[in-house]
Image (cartoon, rainbow, N blue to C red; front, side, top):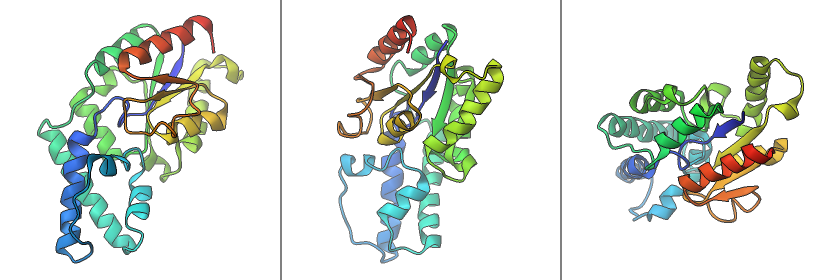
Length: 231
């Protein structure tokens, strides 16, 4: 059995379907408030923020704003995304549910780890029935927005308790994701990683990944190969 730590946005969920219009809505409000000049953002410019926590995104994107302003526009994005999700605008990648179902049926433990807000995670759990696929859920807001490599300490302790072992090598964790946050998690803890090139990260971000998956089909094959030959 493998303990598969899955990133969500960009790895399983095609986030731009809801993030792009939500980002543009918030930016339009910033223009109306006199905080920004009009600008046409490309999809690439917008998607670069996917995978960041809301705190890190707004601290980097708008460091000149007051904290309460950054919080306000972060909430504009979040609320618009929730509205779009409820309207059916959110989509998992084709084959994502089949992938998760197959991995679970093979006896692997599926772990959800995202730099998202609690409400975002809970909304996706409801809409996509994620409890049917994942055994464990962790999101950054629950941990005060610390990075994934720090949240891993809790994941490790929780899995160790479930397995009843003090031997970390027997737990066989793999970090899977499309951004540098996921690869850094793996590198910090000496874990193998699978970089998902079909997501929103750059080749440079994924350059130190143990494996690269160019599709969900390839991701499944890599996981099967790792399981057969051992980490």
